[in-house]
Amino acid sequence: MSGSVTYDGAPPPGTIDMGVGQPSADLLSVDLVRQASESFLDEAHPFELNYGVLEGDERFLESLAGYLAEGYDAVVRPESLFVTGGNSQALDLISTVFSKAGDTVFVEEPSYYLAFQIFRDHGLKVVGVPIDGDGMRIDALEALLDEHSPAFVYTIPGYHNPAGCCMKTERRGRLIELSRQHSFLIVADEVYQLLYYYDRPPPALGTMIESDTVLSLGSFSKILAPGLRLGWIQTSPVLRDRLIENGFVVSGGSINHYSSHIVRHVIDLGLQHAHVEQLKREYRKRVEAMQDSLQAHFGDLATWQRPDGGYFFWLRFGDDVDTGSFRVRAAELQTGFQPGSKFSSDGGLSNFLRLSFAHYGEDDIREGVARMRPLFD
Ligand SMILES: Cc1ncc(COP(=O)(O)O)c(C=O)c1O
Image 1 (cartoon, rainbow, N blue to C red):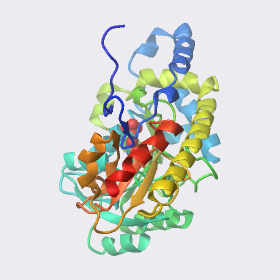
Image 2 (image 1 turned 90 degrees about the horizontal axis):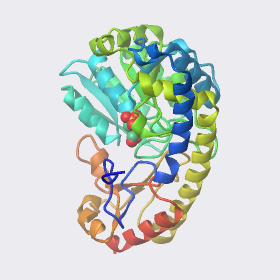
Image 3 (image 1 turned 120 degrees about the vertical axis):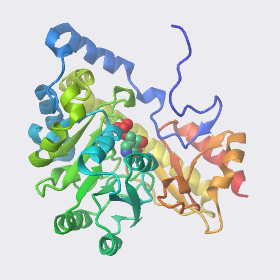
């Protein structure tokens, strides 16, 4: 093997950077991908290396529907699914198909900051809707709908990035009602929906697509491997048809055909289910390690809600604290976090910070949190 292995956002050696929201090496299984790849290649027809049908290979969509039906505990039809290159690509495609430059889109405040960039790349105006411990505040959304007509509302309803919370079931229903009344689409980024460590979360918005206003985005990035660049959009037939008519899709065929073959075998061999069970066991231990060490080191300084799934803790400090100002010193102490202001659509939230427990095991998490404490003394 030549050259060293690196990846986007890799921290310097020795640093425990809890700003990194990516799985640790022990949770990325080369063996699993090898097994599924061999299973596929041993029986592959040459046409499986041709362009794939636009919405995605029928056999993959069937396997995925079966997997999601079990994970969501709901009926999932293969005809409601469309293959993507992961949620980032799906957000870009949705921006192309369902909005035009100059349109307004609503995001949650806070929200996944890299989505802001995708929306702004499309010339969209981003407006924040505040959230609380139960997800998007519907009263605030209603007030903003008096002033704006958004093309879509982007929400992360399950185990929010960065806030860790879940949108209450009742709010999900209300959001759908409002989408019909005000003619906007709901873009639900459900990337963490299957990563729950205690009770099941409220039903996925992907299971509520009958209104013709919901596009639910899922991805194998968090449940298998980000490098596969494979995900899906779950939606109703009218909206799926709009995606299928997009020029990029018509020209290139199924967006990630090859990975979809491999992942079909991962699912059909029963490896996907087993892998997620293992992830959930491991992440639950990490949540508890982070919760304990935060209580020990930050109990007097910050408040937070322990997440029941996903990747993140979201800490709130006193109003006079600017977490961004501690980043350089944090790097010197070989630790790290993401400052709250990154997740704000208008430069607010500077007294918050986000920690991820996905990239490190329990011992490193304890050590990383302990290293952070002197920053705040
Ligand atoms: C809320 C959210 N959406 C999308 C992504 C990126 O997803 P993908 O790897 O499927 O492009 C992430 C990854 O951190 C995320 O947290």
